[in-house]
Image 1: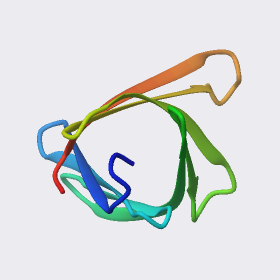
Image 2: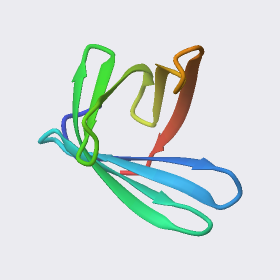
Image 3: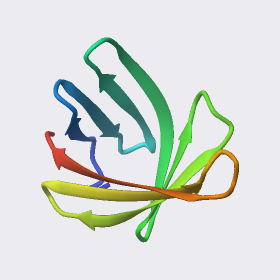
Image 4: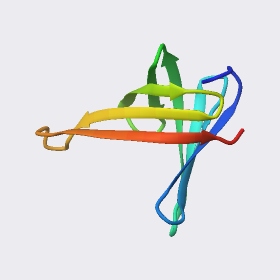
Length: 101
C-alpha cells in the first residue's frame, strides 16, 4: 500500500482484541483477528486506486469499497460506509492502524 512491498498493520480494540492486516505486493492479503475467545483469518485480494481501497474477500461474493483517509509510513486510516441490512440507515466505520512491518 505505502511502498509496494509486504506491509503489516495492526488495530487494537477492546481489552484484548486486535486485527493484523497484511497487504502483499502481489495484491493478496489477510486479516488475522485475535479476540479474547477466538482467532480467525480472512483472506482477500486488494487494490488501491488513488485513495479508493477495494477488498475482495475469498469467502464472500461482494467487494468491500472504502477509502484511505490517511496513509503515512506509520499510520493507515480507512473509512468504509454501507447501508444497514434493512437499507434504511447508512453505517460508517473509521479504523486507524499502526504499521508493524
